[in-house]
Image 1 (cartoon, helix red, strand yellow):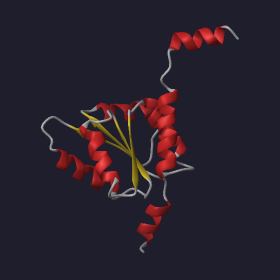
Image 2 (cartoon, rainbow, N blue to C red; image 1 turned 60 degrees about the vertical axis):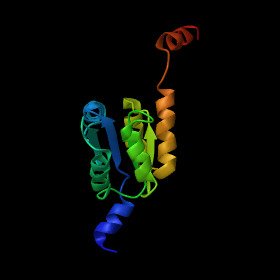
Image 3 (cartoon, rainbow, N blue to C red; image 1 turned 90 degrees about the vertical axis):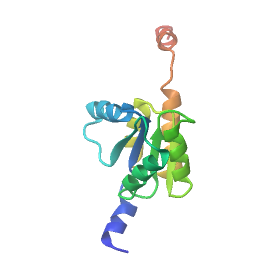
Length: 145
């Protein structure tokens, strides 16, 4: 193996955000407002008229420069970005989750320092679920303490 291959295997997992339109690109900008610059995070946009095979090729090209155990996060379960991610995860050592939120991106960026693959995917899914709250109910519960 070359030094480059060893670096890829030992580096932090990459995060590829795949969405309908420019949603992912803007979400990455928002995450960087909070986290600062994020290494190995890439947003790819499925645009109107784009063929799923072309989108898949674009994602695979980005994954070539990322370590094993990287993570694909898509916006909508059952949508083309999620379906393409699922197909890729059957042929590469990457995990794929859907239901993208800012909280999930932040969790992925911080948790990937100590985990990758399915462990990272589970942490990101948990962050997405935990981030869905009825604000009024939560505030009322805090006030009652």
